[in-house]
Amino acid sequence: MLWPKAVRDRLKTGSDQEIVRSYPYRSACPSTVWGELISGATDDLFFGGYTSYFLWSHVPALPDVLRRKAAKGCRVRFLIGDPEGTVTTQREGIEDVAMAVSTRVRTTMEQLARMGPTEGLEARFSAPADATNHISLSVFRFDDEALVTPHLATRVGHDSPLLHLRRRGEQGMFQRFAEHAEELWSRSVSMERPTHSG
Image (cartoon, rainbow, N blue to C red; front, side):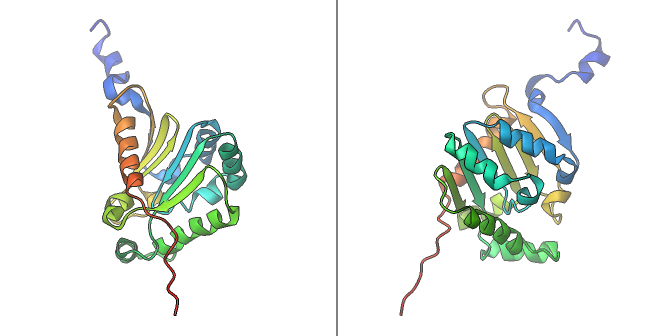
């Protein structure tokens, strides 16, 4: 109350202290931010984009970085959409772009497959019932920081806004988004499809 109103208006107070930076487009967030957040994490890396395909070209030597992180005890998780799911097909019709959603998902699947079995790294599909919630909100967690993208109606991910959040306490914005990601993960399903013989 002692600060002049002009100063108070410029200072972050309350829950907005958790907003480190906001970007009108995900593509406006420098690749160095992604690299630094991944490199700085020691306990939990959660990649909760429906496709997460851009990471492989955005972050130099990402497979090697992830292997090192996992080897040091960092939990590394990828939650992606099912490329053959109904929601994926519907979204492809909405976006109507050359690099379809299923192609972008398969890019991540291919990169993960190339890494081979990596202890400490898990990858799963979001459950069919959660696909709509997953495709509309991407949550990428790096210990106590996160990059969050709420997807706009007809825009692809790089065209949607992004928030860089840092945990400042319980029940803030960071915690709300982290809980959303964990809820989706808790119902996620194996990427291994059943094979039918005969």
